Image 1 (cartoon, rainbow, N blue to C red):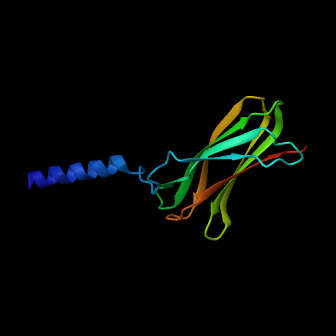
Image 2 (image 1 turned 60 degrees about the vertical axis):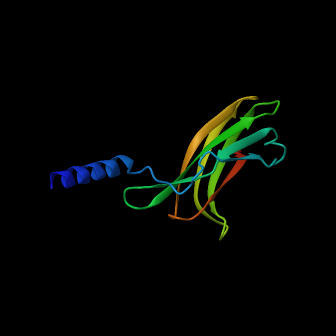
Image 3 (image 1 turned 90 degrees about the vertical axis):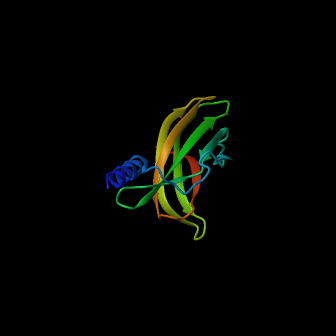
Length: 138
C-alpha cells in the first residue's frame, strides 16, 4: 500500500510539472520568410521572418498559438509609421481566426524589430501566420 501511494504521488507530481507544456507542433523551430509587398514603394526594403505558430493550451481547455516575428529594414532609408498586422489563417477555409497589430513609429535603416504574437484559435486546427506590413498615414 505504501509503494502504491509513493507511485501515485510521483505520477501526480510529474503531471503537475508538465502541465501547460504540451503542443501539437513537433518542430516549433520552423520559420518562414517574406518580403513586404510594396505599396507606393513604401515597404521597399522591409522584410520579415516568422516562426510557424505553435499551439498551446489554457487551463480552461481553450487553445492559442504563439509565433515570433522579426521585421527587418534592409532599405536605404528609415521606415516611418510602420504597421505590422499578424493574421492567424485557417487554410482549409481561408478565414482569419485572430489578428494582432503592432505599430512602430520608426524602423531605422539596417535595424530590426522583433516581437511575439499570441493569437486565439481552435484546438487541433493547423494554422498559418500571415504577416502584412503597411504604413499608417496620419
